[in-house]
Image 1 (cartoon, rainbow, N blue to C red):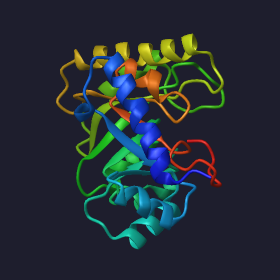
Image 2: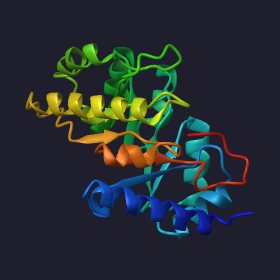
Image 3: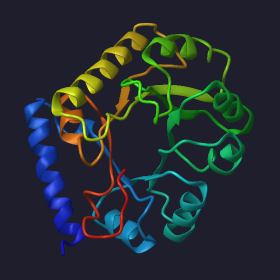
Length: 231
């Protein structure tokens, strides 16, 4: 059985290799530890090892972790699909939303948020039926339509590569998202600076880093040999 600390060493070694390959430094990369299926004790351990970005995908899990950890230094990421009816439970508890995927969600955030929320627009680059998110062709119009939304700041785009895809397919998915991000940046919209990329999970974060991701969402790699579902 590995310990979480041993897994951390393996992850950091791989991060270092990928960053060197991309000629980047660690400062520009945020590792979001996906704690959605792990215990409060395990979440506390990764925080004690220096990770301050935690990702949850259910309101109940988010609230339970926050109440147990009671640590103002933790940055909270909501990484799953957010039901419109649950926005009021979540939106004022998080620092980042990685899954802005429809207009009805944007409208509810605008209604419920007490201050601007840093959002990633979710893009279904690969066009998978099993995943939500905008098609690449829809992204520009959606972001333009947010001009009057004072509580939403589009800081970047998010995608997931197809599961079990080959390296070439994964790399192409991430590369296309980066190109789309660059196109949004060129719009020069104050409410959508779109400087960030949220892409890469336990199985493909090295490729994501090489393709420019600066937010990677890593879960199972931290908690190997425990009962953890994939990110």
